[in-house]
Image (cartoon, rainbow, N blue to C red; front, side, top):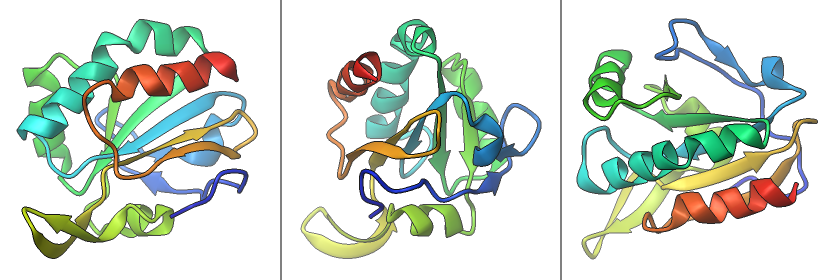
Length: 153
């Protein structure tokens, strides 16, 4: 997993905003990049809704919020519409970006080792440095913890 204090790996991914998002194009703004396993599942829904509920406060910190999963844009669009999400979801179907960040790999799911998306969040400052890593995120209360970090930047 990418360590705090290191430069965030650049990427370019298709977005529900209708254009590809490139991390380096967001320099000058903080970025919260969160990786989640699957659209419309209970845990992922609670996570994105937590971010949505805090979106105004997140934006006040000068931050761009981006959710990433291996689902395609059609799935993301439905998920976004179902829950009226007002931030971009990015499609990492080949899992290359998740792999760069250490968010794709072996994990334990229901007592079994599997390979998949490791729910994790990265707070990246305006200069492109990873300021905070939340590995193996617990969904409930997570958005508030991220907001505390953003308000301290």
